[in-house]
Length: 194
Image (tube, rainbow, N blue to C red; front, side, top):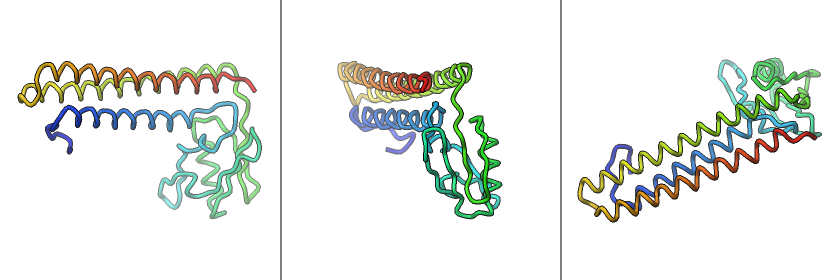
């Protein structure tokens, strides 16, 4: 089914809505992986782009990343001449990290989070979570409009419409709950003091 194309059935509408909601959930999980907790994780550096010969390139495509200990990430560039650009990109990110290099490898110590920083991260997490809740609700709205169009085009009965709208609402509630649950788990990680 192409965008703008009329849905053929209620099942099509539900399947499309579910697939889009699943995508919202995986996007949330990817975005949450970049929110810092007190523990080192290479996913923390996922959003960092390095100016690699004039092309913004994901960090993991120009270097090997390791977590040798819970409070340290090491970044080993494949091209040692890029060590300065990589260090600059990490420093310029909004993660508040202070990398250092020895000419061959960049060490990124992960400082323990202050209480204030934890609160900022939780606030940011709540904002991200709300954006994803809104996205799920927008998918519900689109699906409901598609169902109403099926009724208007006399492809389904009003009883079918009622059942379909209930099914879409149930799906929406399920995904909102999944979004909230993922957010709660991440919030607990952020607030946990190691």
